[in-house]
Length: 129
Image 1 (cartoon, one colour):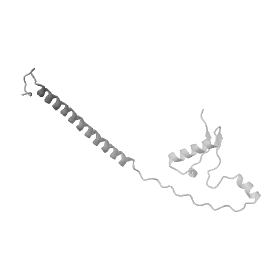
Image 2: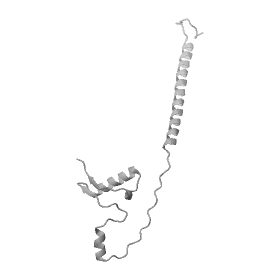
Image 3: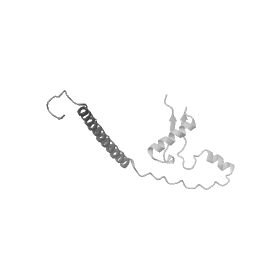
Image 4: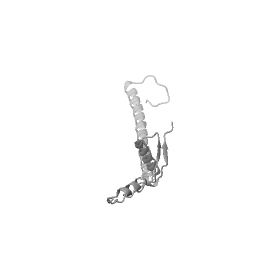
């Protein structure tokens, strides 16, 4: 009838409608299959990404409680003021950098290195212009 090898110019309205509907059905079936394949690949890649990105969190031990200092005589406090605070790594020279910016930079470096700040020693911080 309408699926013959001969070219026919006398198609009825019903035959043309059936051919058009079958053509649309094939196209939409192909699009639905393509959509299902893309969705399946997306879920597969998402699951693989989760598997690769899940790493155990590093546990940082809580700092030990520091006992409150006892009353210090004036001579001892003057001697202590020239020394570094307990847990610090000495003095740092700041060259045209505000202390707040220096503190942020030191915290960022410690975080990126994965080390506690008191294990790092900063000698000087200088802004490069």
